[in-house]
Image (cartoon, rainbow, N blue to C red; front, side):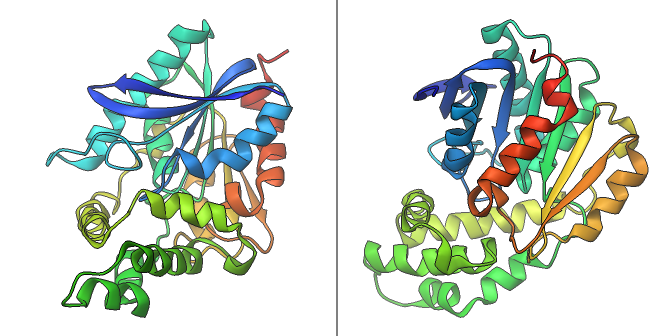
Length: 287
């Protein structure tokens, strides 16, 4: 069992937090979704640690404990961060290639990285990548009665109330069965949005990025193997969006996980780990 080490990194000028396994094989770089953090990968990292695989999860700029985003376009900032992360991982490990695993916004960042990197990226596992067949997620989340009430209250709201309200909203949209999710997962997510001002900042970021995700890809430029993974009951990004990638990227394929929502790394970590560890791009040089 490889120990999980938490430390700080500076990439592309952004200080961030890393959760790292020092196992073998090409590095697995784990990119989380919008409003999430590296903590979303803890279940998957535990499984990878038992398998002895090397992996690195980071907080993307603007989320978790990373430095905030600037007023520049968000995707271009995340592109620069992903480029720096790939360079760092290869320099630290001496590997020739890395594999990226990205959920939602992280999957979008991974696809854009695959358009630019034709040699150093050995493969991409894109888990419900944003920017394809998306719901009107900002509108849907903003209309959630719990979140709407939280943001509209005309008086200060105690942090435990914010945490409970945000946990309910997160669970409802991220998972097929929120009642089955470990409370510690919800608490970790809410710890990065401790008060109403922090929640309002995330909503503001959502409005900024939704236009950038309208058509963010040039998929014909992707040369590495791509595995698409979707939860059957994803309410935020629909599996139908996979068709664009399957048509544009030779050798790409789709796996749909039954009875699972937007975050398989939390609801079905063992299944996702099996897919990642069996993915040809991950294992081609891991022997």
